Length: 62
Image (cartoon, rainbow, N blue to C red; front, side, top):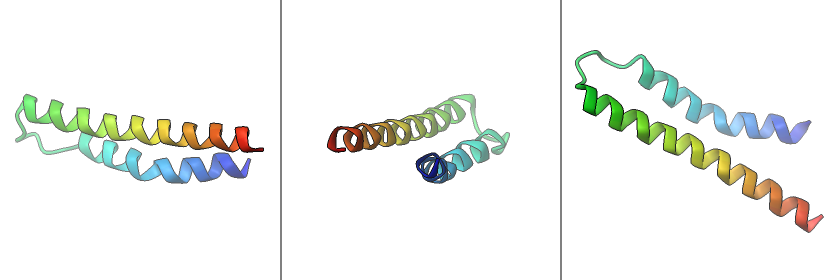
C-alpha cells in the first residue's frame, strides 16, 4: 500500500502540469497547444514507465 502512495505522489506533479496546460491561454495557436500537450503526455507516460521499471526491478531483487 505504501508503494502505491509513493508512486501517486511522484506522478502528481506531472498530472498538475498536464492539468494546467489544459486550462492554458486561448491565445495559443492549435499547433502550439498540440505540441505542448504532447510533451506533457510524453512526460507523464515516461514517469509511469520509469515507476513500472523500478517496481519490476525490486520484484526481481526480492
